[in-house]
Length: 268
Image (cartoon, rainbow, N blue to C red; front, side):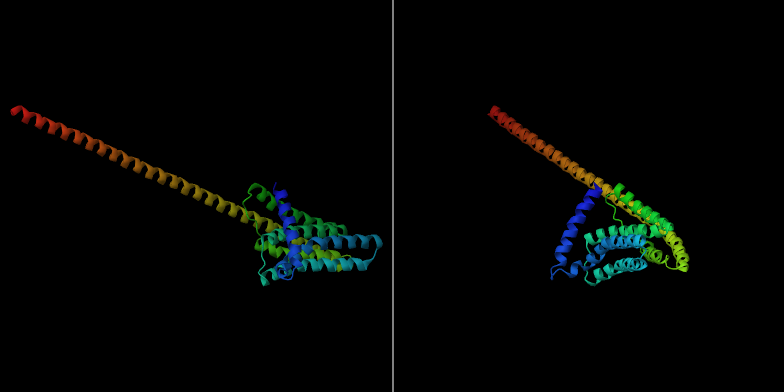
């Protein structure tokens, strides 16, 4: 259900993005989203070029593929700058950014893992981080999962290591550097996973506290309403008692008056 809802919102948002991007009056509003969307296309291009390079043995295609991947990494910064410049933050933009970050890293990671199997470590790290957030989202639908500070920092060693993965086949020194970058990226991925668990647990505690506080307030409200109703009923009962006493007094007065009239007539 969550995936189906996500897909519907993604398709609807994408259609609106392209529609507004090609209109002069709404073009700026969608520039950030277009930069983000490009990260869905770029990994496929780099993967295709790398496969052709391996089959044909054309080194230049591998270099072009690495440059395109590097540009894709830069778009992660460009969409943020564009969003702030034109104040174009949106729910769709947030949805798109979360999807493309993991997608880009995984597809490019698969591409690089073909050249160097050690990059499967970084792929596993991204899958674990993604699984943590998906798990929390499935269990707590109202939770709002946002990037942590260490998670944003982690993107740079990740993208750097992926870029080095392409170039490591050109020079043996670059291969050593790329392996070091894999270890560094894995460290940041562990810290990122821990930060997401901590942040999500804190968010859940806040949600539970708010729900409990709301429940307490609702119960207090119900008690207050019942108290007011009881007081009204008491007042109504007292009023009825007074009315009955007034009726009894009238009857008594009438009886006394009749008695006096009877005695007066008798004396006459």
